[in-house]
Image (tube, rainbow, N blue to C red; front, side, top):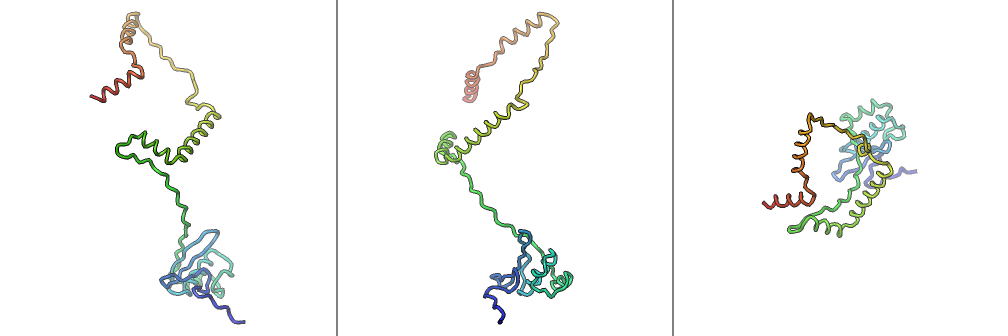
Length: 193
């Protein structure tokens, strides 16, 4: 029986293939990972480098391109420059970029957010759903330790006389805290000035 011809473009060696440059590249697979060994000027030298990787990983001799080589030391002598195995990582799937809110000139933040929610309602719904689920989980867990009501600390003010107490009350009368509406009114008027 005549020896099988290697199809054009194939090297006839395990994991050795010709590159567009004319050189020969060699790749090695082990335990579900792929390794790039290097590029060599001939298919024969690339096959020797592959065999060296087989010896290093202690794979069966049936995986060798040159089974007549008896030891790892002999295989290493046949590849004087050695090999430099670099892991080939697969490209990760590109994440779809989420749209961002761009505020146009003359547009308020509220108008921009309303436009975004109309154009990309799926993101708004997903965010609302996330917060609903989060809130429901928090209700199941109960209040956080910091939210739980504990004994309040009361610091008694000791006064030496009733006059001090009356003086204190008079000062407090003039310092009433403003209501929410009064506060915002004062805040707006200070911005205008």
